[in-house]
Length: 263
Ligand code: DGL
Image (cartoon, rainbow, N blue to C red; front, side, top):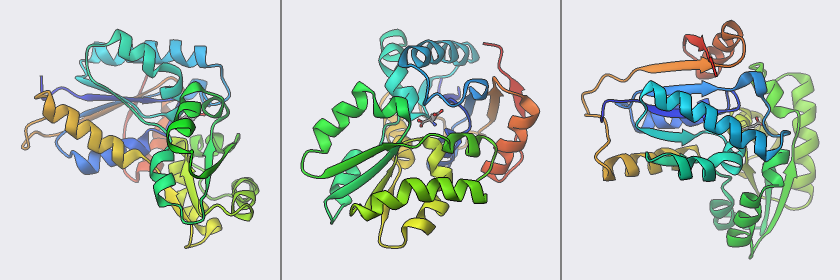
């Protein structure tokens, strides 16, 4: 069992930022990754679409033999975590926006959270704000358009820069000293966001916390890969495999091969 892969999925390539954190923390774990790039962005789709898609993709990963499921998508968590936990017997680790660490980090008492439209409107976001955002002001803003740039491996074009400036500047003007990256796609825009926000602003993403949580759960359940295991990685996309291969290789900074997803 322990040498079986961990499954990760996202609407597209954003979850690769989580894969990167898991790879760094757990070098012996094999990973099966699914990008639903044909349907990205999920962030402007109804929660019900994401629930159904999450179940379909999880079913595919289970058929590949994964031992644990990581939802590498905040929007995917909002839409499908509950359904997956009700259906699967394996551990499900689900990323969510770091409102809690942001509330602990802010000195100005103002936190900006950039999220997808669906995430921003979700019960999960309302619950996070209710539990962790009470003693600070959290300005949660949907930022449509960014995911499409990351899906094309564009992390720095003039058009993207303009878009990010337009979203981040108003948060800074309102006193935010901490910015939550509420989509795994935005993690790839961290250098650009940091450049715009400046050194005094703390940027929060939760990929490393997910990797730590995965490590904990695998150890607890006796599912961790042996230290000497040789990790493998497999990638599938619902989009065009050749294009996905180009984009994923560019984002990861190493060549990966991507197969067509059949669900
Ligand atoms: N990367 C996902 C997230 O963390 C989904 C973004 C999208 O497809 O809109 O929210």
